[in-house]
Length: 276
Image (tube, rainbow, N blue to C red; front, side, top):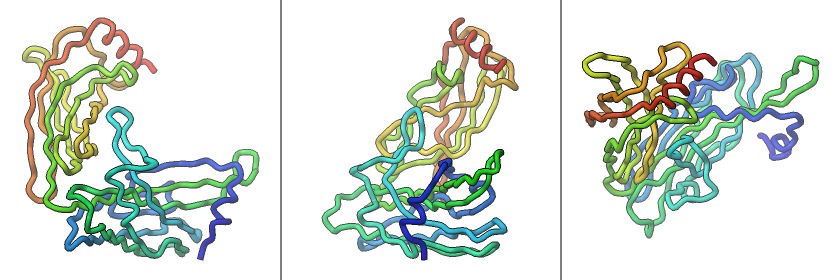
């Protein structure tokens, strides 16, 4: 059994937040990375499996926080939220000691209060591992890594409803982005398939996997274009067309076609970005 003292004594720590990769620096693997379920009589359950993929004993602490997906910066934890699942979330065990090559299961149980309105309630369940290593000077360094599993519990019938609101050039990231609005009551994680054309000429095609768009919010999805491995954009008017696809069993598909203007300033910025 771990104690709080073990986690509080972190000297020279480097904090690494790994959201939704399959492993954390080769130490711990967690699956699944997202759980969506509907409450039945106010209760919902899920199970996550934590695997020690290293050659050393791993000590893992489990805890939960409310979260959202910000329009521009993506995932972020919150101090509070009207959709916070954590007051109604129970899980066991909370602390794990896992031998090399072994796996442990953590059961998540959401018990929603009867007076809660219908809607989606969510939390990110962190699996936090503390490991000791040595830096280049031979000093002991404590590294804290954590993998987040998103847990969505829906009370009543809730669905996502996506719409494409526009496309623009992100002046900070120096890439094209697509603005997607979710007017529904459920979070969606659509895949994006896109094609950029200028006139009849295909400039670039691409795929963006599983981008979370929280219920009743919007999100800019970066296309990762242009970048340093690919040609820069020329000024002019382009057409961005493609399809958003989301859902588990019955896939929902939303085709779109939208124009985007790249200014001379945007083109110059993308050229600078390609040389970095």
